[in-house]
Length: 594
Ligand code: ATP
Ligand code: MG
Image (cartoon, rainbow, N blue to C red; front, side):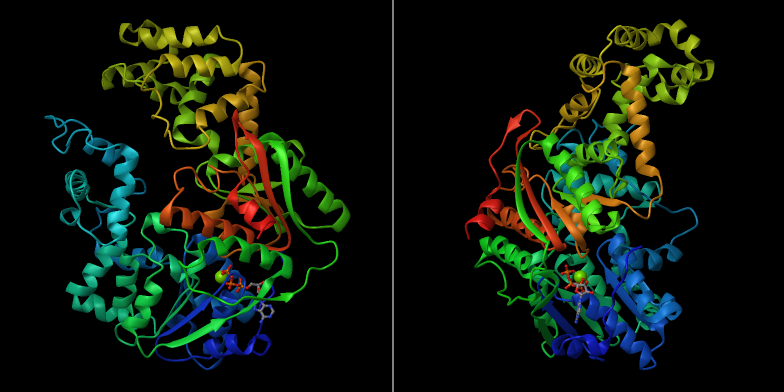
């Protein structure tokens, strides 16, 4: 399907080759998007192997699982089966591998800390001694704890009320013998420092350590890397401070300077030729990132290619978000028909997950296969699922797993043994049980509302606490989005059929599919055709991030998005998103009037 081109050593330019043939000691390569950093890393691995280094002695770290997959594909294309012995993964996955054998049998990894933090934020009680009271919002506590861990700070190195919440969370977690995602790295650092055998074993394990996307490394990961390479200092890092987009999670682009302080003798290479995009797209990138002038390293970027005939670099403005999505579908069909583009060589990028919904629907309507790269599907996210399960229960009560979890959502104080009892006894038991009366009344009322959008509105309006408080700062509210989707259907049954169909569709395995994802997930990847959606003030830049470093991060995000394209780039802006009128993004203006 997708042809993978991997330049060999002699196809690299001089600067790339100089970096790729570097053997021992620290090295840092700094270069803008599309300049062949990752390609050079692959060439270096290939070169090391050809020189007799055992593939098993090489470790290459990247930022996301998708990027790791991409790197694996490129390496296997370059060196064949031998490449399989090279370790390629995220820093987390490497730490995970090191830490899990050290834990007892009964330890588990916590995939989602939400419920534990939720407990910590409850009032203390006999049943819940870990409660510290609702001193912070749940979402805030979750991200603040993750951020503290990224900064390698313990509960007593942060300030109240976070200290209390963080400390209680740590106690509860230890009591339950669980570690969270961030703990993997912190725990590995601890083991390096306290367990000689562990340190010796893992410092011998990989003799060549490489890190792609180094600009998004956080403090904990940096400390981890330093421990890991202590025996040989063969640390080779590659990055672009223009593409640092995880500041909000503790990424520290200044580590690129720190690297040079730490390793003053490190070799330094800069790359200046952009091989990915034609000159017009390179120029679009330049005009966007220029808004951050004075705050980042100056870099020279020279386009290797001029715009081929028929290629597109275009600003598209439309009336509404619906039209934006339809435009993408139509344009994809046109490109397919007139230029034979393959679906998997096209991507739609947006700032926030929730924006995927309209594109999914437009592509599904147009029968274009697509794949949403992401966490949970919109219709399966926890709050949306609760509402949909209410609607499902109005249609069919035969499956207790559909309505069982709704009995106490919102809190109806139905005792847990009653919940179990009626789940066992089926719907008749629910109807008969006096403690379930309020729930049954809700279902009965809901049944009388024919239109799904009205049913959802009634449910949300009349059941405080049913779903999590909507974050006021989100430019697109999921409840509004759900209601907008439902309003396309006249009956609850037909809406639910649509929902099931679209969830099913998103799960079909597809090799040939248009890729839909957030800009964050697109880092390091490239496509022939890229649609950047939602270029409106408030969406990109996001309304939560309109000043200072946060705004500069939005600019870097926009730069990352635009520089994913090889030949065709569409920058899209609608006037209306939902029922909100928005100004066209400053990034569109920067491209139009440099
Ligand atoms: P990003 O910062 O977005 O991760 P990058 O610097 O890692 O970008 P690559 O993905 O390695 O860039 O390369 C961009 C494109 O240029 C790829 O398609 C790659 O195959 C191609 N490329 C890299 N180096 C060369 C070269 N010397 N000759 C021809 N093509 C090249
Ligand atoms: Mg790269």
